[in-house]
Image (cartoon, rainbow, N blue to C red):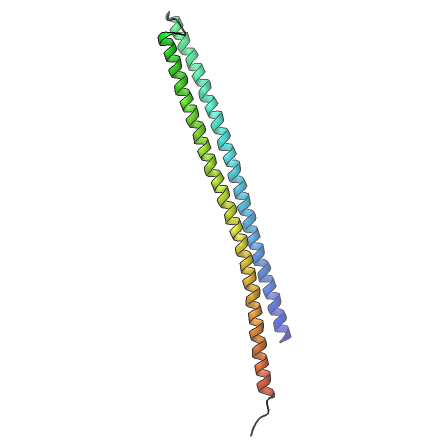
Length: 164
C-alpha cells in the first residue's frame, strides 16, 4: 500500500504543479495582451492629436490661399465677406479637429477597456489554476483515504478467524 500512496502523492503533486503553471502562463499572456492594448490606446490618442494638428494646418493654408485670391481680386481683407470666409474655414477645421480628437479618445477608451478585460481574464485563469490544483490534491487525498480504508477492511477480513 505504501508504493501506491507514494505514486498517488507524486501524481497529485505533478498535476497540481501543472495546473498552477498553466494558470500562471495564461495570466502572463493576458498581461502581455493588456500591455499591447494599452500601447494601442496611447497610439490612438497620439495619432488623433497629430491628425487634428494636420487639419488645423491645412485650414491655415487654405485661409492663406483664399486671402491671396481675395486680395488679388481687390477685396479688402479682415472685414466683411473676407472675414466671414476665414472664420468659416477656421470654424469648420476646428470642428473636424475636435471630432478627430474625440474619436481618438473613444478608441483609446475602448483599448483601455480591452486591456482591463485581458487582465481580468488572466487573473481568472490564474485563480482557476489554483482551484484546479487544490481539487487535484483533495481528490488524491480522498483516493488515498479510500484506499487505506479498503485495505484496512481487507486486512481485517483475511485475519479474522474462520469458523468451520
